[in-house]
Each structure stands twice: as structure tokens, then as C-alpha cells.
Image (cartoon, rainbow, N blue to C red; front, side):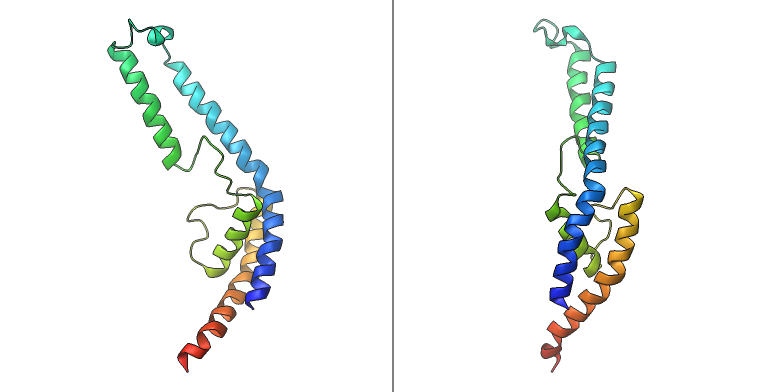
Length: 142
């Protein structure tokens, strides 16, 4: 059962990468464009000039940029590639689904195909993980 789960996770690594990776990269592009749009909308071109750096608006602008970076990081809308849907990330996702430790604790499929595949993989991976756990824990119970 454990080997079957690992093989399923390997297949899931390829499948989820192909279904989800481009959507993940597109979300980073969108987040960066949104961040730039927000910061550019309140940008004052002279804040780079040393004579203006102590002006309250310029100081608050730096604080705004810092707060926005933290917001994007915490809100799951990262500005940088977190590599969630690479082969390894996808492999881990299938193991995570099978073990039921948190389908969407960190990542969840965004595409319709990925969501359907998660359901299909869950119906296979959860029983395999349960059988593997029962098999591995059986000797401990005796």
C-alpha cells in the first residue's frame, strides 16, 4: 500500500505540475503587477532625492511598501515564486491529501482540472495511506 501511494504521488507530481504550474506563475505575475500599481499610484518622484527623504510622505511611502510586502506574503499572494506546483511540490501535495493532514493548509489547486484531479487522487490516496498506516502499525498493536 505504501509503494502504491508513492507511485500515485509520483504520477500526481507530473499531473499536478502540468495542470497547476502555469496558473501559479500567472498569479505571481498578477500579484507583482497589483503591488506595482498600488505603490506607483502613491509614488512621489522626488522621494529618492536626499532633500525629500525626511518628508513625512516619503517616510510613510516606505512604510506602505513594507506593509504591502508583508500583506502579500501573509495573504498567500506572494510576489515571488514559492514553487508550490513543481514536481516535488505536487508530489508532496498528493502525500498530504492521502494522509489527510491538510488539503488546503498551504496550497490547493486553482484550475478546474486540478480540482477534479485532487478529488480523484484523494479517493485513491486516502485508502492507500490508511492501509499503509494499518500495515505499518499492525505489529505495534500485537
